[in-house]
Structure formats: C-alpha cells, structure tokens
Image 1 (cartoon, rainbow, N blue to C red):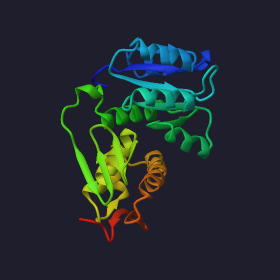
Image 2: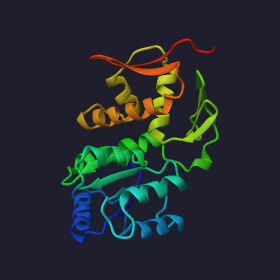
Image 3: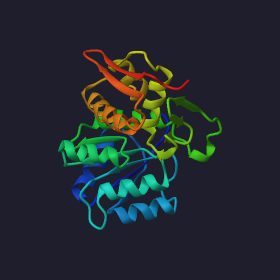
Image 4: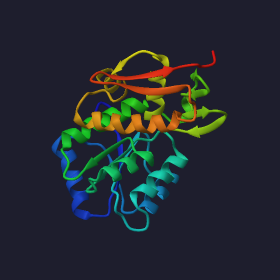
Length: 241
C-alpha cells in the first residue's frame, strides 16, 4: 500500500495475533498494527483516538466481554465509514450475513490467504475513500419513487422514514439509481463497487442485493430484478415523477 494504513486488530488469541503480524511482515508491509484483546478495549482505543487515521479494523468474532457482532454494531453507531473486516474461524453463511448486517465491509475465514486479505483491505479503503466524515463537503442526493439517497451522509429515506446505511449499500444504491431501468451486469457492479470480480466479491454482492431488496421493499413501485445470466436492474413502475 502506498500510504501506511494503521491496522487495529481485535483478537484475543496470541497465536492468531502473531500469525497476522508475521503475515504482514512476510509481504514487507510496515503498517502499524495496534492490538485490542477484546471489544471493550477496542472501543476505548477508538474513543481515545489511540489508532491514528487512516485505519482499518480487523476483528475476530468470538472474544471475551464483547463479541465481534456487538463490537461492529457499536463501531457503526459511532462511525459510519471506518472499514471493518471480520477475520474469524466462523464460516457459516448465517454468520457471514449477520456480519454484513452489523456493518462489516468484508468477511474472511481462517485460515486466510494473506494476498487476498491485502487485496480486500485495499478494496474497502478505495471504496470508502477513507477520510473522516466531517471533511466531506460535496453533498450528493439521488431520488427515485418514494426514496431519497443522501450519498454524502449515508442516509436513506423511504416513505418519509430515515435510515442509516453502510458505505457499500450507499455505493450500490447510487449505482442502481443513476442507472435505473438499465441492466447492470454483475461484472460492472463488482468492478464499480468492489474494484474486482472474483468468487468472494460475487458472494458479497448476492448478500448485498438481498439487503437492498429488503431496504427498498416498502416502495411498491421500485424493485431490483434479476436478469438471468446477466445481472440486475432497478426498475420503476407506475411511479411518481
């Protein structure tokens, strides 16, 4: 990575901590690695700005005092854009979906491939264009049907109800709204949002499509349809101008 990224590793297993450190050294990466052994310590370090910007959080799921899901939820309530990557032995689809629901940008299972880990870190940092929210000045809003996407502030309004959404959800919605009623191929979506097209990002896309469908469901005139073998399309029917 051209710019050093400060890594907060939230992990209570000493062997896993050592392996992550060795893995980064193996790729000659001098990125600072800050360690928190449980969720409470991680939140305290973030609250005290003990981990300088720019930063990315790698966290385990099974930890004492506070598990990874609760930690991710707490982080998202305080910061909407900081990249979160689950690095855990829990490989069930249910846990993966729950991880994304709680605000994760990526989810990897142990044992992991180092080069893939680095690639995912680069991708999520690129997607978030990592900068503190208060430094963003340009405001972008997009409307369709009864929905309004405040892309700058990661806010989504549907039928007058406001919701906070993740960086990835905001990017996907922006892409769909600006290309409404047009086919978006899976490849185009993956390259625009994740920066690469592979098995792992394809799985992430399927999870996020399901999340977006639930998000926009209250507006009966807008839906995301699957174009078999090609991709997806956000369609608007019998809608207001």
